[in-house]
Image (cartoon, rainbow, N blue to C red):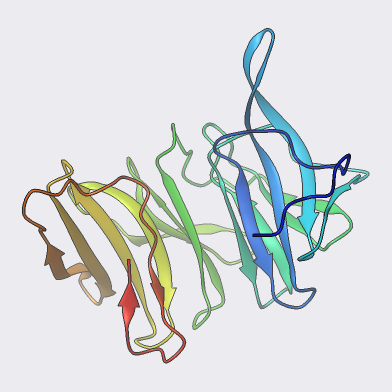
Length: 219
């Protein structure tokens, strides 16, 4: 475990921050989240980078408004990290390592609460957002369009693009009793598998990813 040096500048404690990895610059970017002050809980709007050795706060001439419970994903098409999904926020921002740029406030789904999931569809070159009360939408850099109208019936906690199958995958929990994984298909979401470990509650906030071989899906 690598700990910051004594007196080093580090992000303050927070929940619901967005973190994304930039594979070109090989850095992890953290934005926003919900922190605690003497006045209570407040949304934050600071940007930090972790290069593997230390945290550095980034001061941008422009920046997204303070927010929490959103997603930050890398878009290979533009070579930038893209931020979207905070409750009540419809604008899309990109980060190039130095500055934030607002990409517009498109007329798309309006996230509510911590209910939005965002990923990047590498195959189609589209930003994908699953919002519980709307369904699944894609953004081409200018406009939103509906991609999958019907949402899985349970609370969904993870959305990813699976390179191995070239399909979107979504994980949804059924009242903490089982975990359902669905994949995108011609007719919408198709149930792929159900995990129901006896006597074990399924935690909220799981993630989906492939191992290095690309053959094994890990939750």
